[in-house]
Length: 56
Image (tube, rainbow, N blue to C red):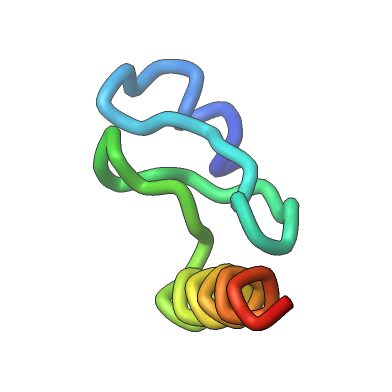
């Protein structure tokens, strides 16, 4: 039902989460993550990877 609503409503966009890959309906165009938790985990992993690269 939600999918059929999305097809008729152009303001909602179906996207894949940048961190976990789960499909979600973006409430805004700039949304890249399915939840704040996924966004935070992505940023933590990204920061740790950057730190590990500078330590070498």
